[in-house]
Length: 601
Image (spheres, rainbow, N blue to C red):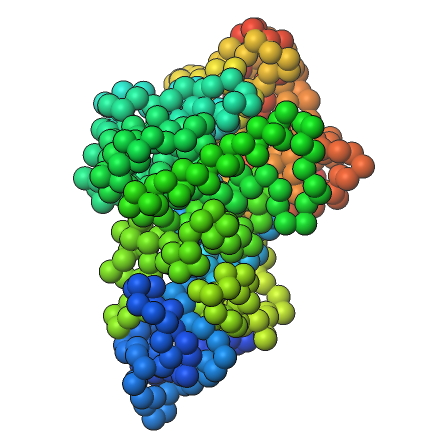
């Protein structure tokens, strides 16, 4: 597409998206710049530790300017009447996954679910760093809580490395590699870093690798040097103490292999680390679920581990460890937004008072994230991230579910009395470029400025794949791909080419007839297209020498259940890849050049 036309398409996309957001925004109460909003005659739980008080809170330009029992409403203020309701700081969820298999799954709907639950600050652990900037741009265009994007690190063969490549999760095993991995992430500006430091798999599957204390300490030090806080995936008591010694900021997940000793709890408390136990993901029987089958050994084990998780929460809280709120929502069927409110209820069920649970969900979580000076309490100077609730949740914790209004930066983004009629959808697709990659860029990025990623089979036993750019002839380059297939049934390996940075914005390929590539290899390969509606695949065979393929879209079959196959549209494509399928233990290779789309005749 000519540059001028491409810019016109991008401008049109921006205008349409802005118009959609404006239509949604018209349903909410937006204060004009400089105008005061007064929430009057409301019972305030300010999360400072003080008893609730009745009075008025004044907001201007996204900040609380005054709050107290004797505050007067200035003339001309926009008034929100708080009679019969409680005002709290907005809730936090420091551990979520905004992924395609979550409920809900699309970004605008996830944002809406959190706003409806009174959640105003969220950490998303699910995105590869390549997706950070395009997702930040998207979040700016939709009603949303504050969403912090979190980079990931693990050990080779560890949890988090068992389902992703190093463009998604960095693999480190020494202090030097940890320091370098942090440096590699800095250009993406991660808000936080999550470290899968514990390889225990809950006694349900073989234990994976874990990070040693020296590596975790070096990782935390390097991150702190760059003003980035660290959260860990830690689920055993011994490694909880190790994480505390290593200087991490938040231990995420419950320690649940055994009860902590008093000495271990004291050591963890002395470190200053925060604890986000994510009880909601471990709850043995969720509300509305069938009764548990206690004849099942797996169920009995799950119940036992949850009891340990509750006990360790009580032990750590009593020892002075500050508790933050995280859920792991988006994983294991845990529903975004609802899970946050359930976590507050589970804190109380585990032994915390309703007041302690609410402070954990607000002020303590803000402290854990290094945001206490900005938000988390109702006080002058704080960001006006607030939730208005019918009832008194400090007396009856289930009242947290009676959300009336949610304000982010002083703007009402959720009103239970006037829910939005519609939500923005995915970003409008861009016109697909004919050339995806000719491998001429020396920086390793594709012709569409995306970063290729490897696609591997899941699990501890994984295929190994490498790729490198090499000269094909003078002035021309190709991508050489080699793979050692895992010793298991149906191993798989491949290279994927995102059609936009981070595979966030879809592309419209309806102007083309299919996929083309030059392939040099030995045997059968699979071309794969990922769309918003799922995977589509077509088989190709490469013999001796270079083979040029033109595979029409009509030859691609839906890779899921044929009975539920969606109609092919061609206007929602995210990735194109080449997959290798061989027997376990075999090696394989191919070379590819000039992959892209070919025009319809």
